[in-house]
Amino acid sequence: DGGITQSPKYLFRKEGQNVTLSCEQNLNHDAMYWYRQDPGQGLRLIYYSQIVNDFQKGDIAEGYSVSREKKESFPLTVTSAQKNPTAFYLCASSIKRDSGNTIYFGEGSWLTVV
Amino acid sequence: EDQVTQSPEALRLQEGESSSLNCSYTVSGLRGLFWYRQDPGKGPEFLFTLYSAGEEKEKERLKATLTKKESFLHITAPKPEDSATYLCAVQPYSSASKIIFGSGTRLSIRP
Image (cartoon, rainbow over all chains, first blue to last red):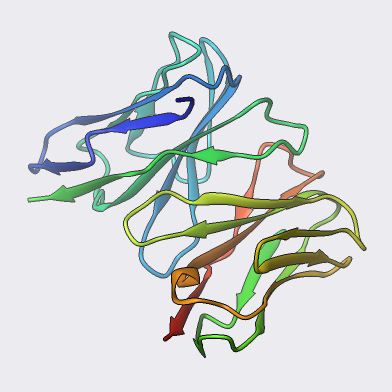
């Protein structure tokens, strides 16, 4: 089945630790995104990528890093510099970025600081 | 400033009681408006994309409409399984790199 796979579903981070969230898509989409969702708030864009080996910061990129070495993969690293990382993280993809094409989402990953 | 406001924040309906959710937006130019359904602990599920004022789309008990300032998601004779959070998002021409999401409306349908 075509879709977007995020892993792990639940992740716990200790203080000072970096963690990486995986996102893989088999939809042959060019653009991929990472959003953060906090209770009662809209989705906020962390990073996006329109093409392999290129990515741009979104509204809340501080404390996060990404890579786009393959078209189907867009992992997100939450670094120790992110002071409030506990949230629900959503990976998404679309055919192209700038054409009003629909964004499709994965099932999300919960990150909790312990 | 581009922004999206959804109302109400929460809505409780009796099964079969029709209603509408509102999404008001302010953008310099609209490239597209999107509606999603989100169940607790899951990723948003795509429902509709609307591109121009006057456009309407339907899916089962849901119908989305669009004007130059707002969009409505009409729910006709809802069932308990329609309970979810409904998200609205817009993609403006002024900043094609952004898709702006509203905070959502939590819909609860009582049997």
